[in-house]
Image 1 (cartoon, one colour):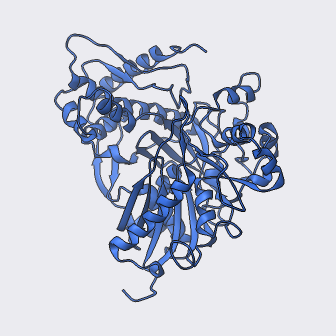
Image 2 (tube, helix red, strand yellow):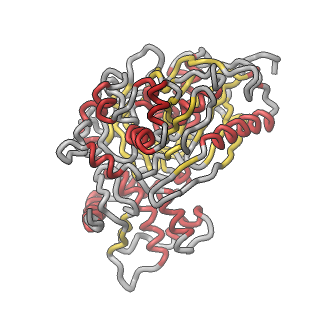
Image 3 (cartoon, rainbow, N blue to C red):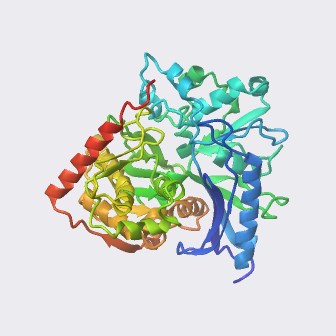
Length: 506
């Protein structure tokens, strides 16, 4: 390596349970990685929090670890990108950098009553035409309102200009670019589109929504594109030198970008803790009538924004984790495919994982989990198979809703995330969709997407064509199930889902 040559781009992947720093070369190959977990706080039922300062510490340590393990010098990095858990919210003092409260995590449900209060005539979709989203606890605008209303002295600090807000991308950029007195206070359009505070058409903070939620605009970051130079790291920071910070994408949009889904109609599904299926709808805003989210997919520099439809599934990998930890039928998550593979089907049972309600396309907070269709014939092998099949059935529901909303027929599905290691699940997904399911050679699509956004901004990559050339297929699963069987299984699933409704009283 020639000293000073910009051979790599690095990206921070700040997730719900851990933080990674990954370094890629020009071919999109991973050169080094370091991942560190952070603590989860559950102060009350339904409340989920993180310590923002611990996240900064873990980020710095992960950066050092990735550089040191590969012997890569900071001066060889052309740019830094960021991808993040999207709706998790932080508010802090701009003069000291000290948070006023823990980060309120996207999974947190403390704003449930607040969201119902904000709904006009009980209509949770009352602001969808402006922000693309229903009123739910998922998004960060209601979290910010809760923080301002419930934290003593915070509203005064916001009014005086001392308190500033951001999702985790904003928090990280602010610290990377110098923190107190120096830090750049920005977010990108993908994260802003998850707040319920941004007008989905103008890509600016909505005066109407700020008034509805009683939020002073001065606490909010400036909205920028997903790929541009926001600022530079500082000489006294973790890198010890100036490096452009030039890419921000919320985690699921980053996976869409990393999968190079740049054409209208292309879609990806990330199988992680939950499941997130995004479909590129181009420069067209598609307002869902089927329970999906309208979101910004990405915006590169001065180019127009590209929009997406998104379907969110609350439980995917977390259901496997529950099966392991609470049922004790397997000792590690990867064993579930072996157990499920001992039987040819689920024996007629369905597992609806509505542990905290159902996300898209149902949005039923009154639903609860169930296993239905039990007979003497059923063994733990069948239950294991039903656990895996539940994820594929939920993805099928979202797939159908996307085609209905957009009028665009999907030809295949690109997949990523931890669960794609399960051959059984991927085959069943192809079978129940009746479409090819394609796994890329580089599975780290989320952090790769942030890397691509950062690299494009500084000319490390010149075009989408270069990124397409980096993408390659690892494996493809074709559907082998006949149409009648697919229809029968799916009919049974929908029947099971309906049985899960209305278990919880309002």
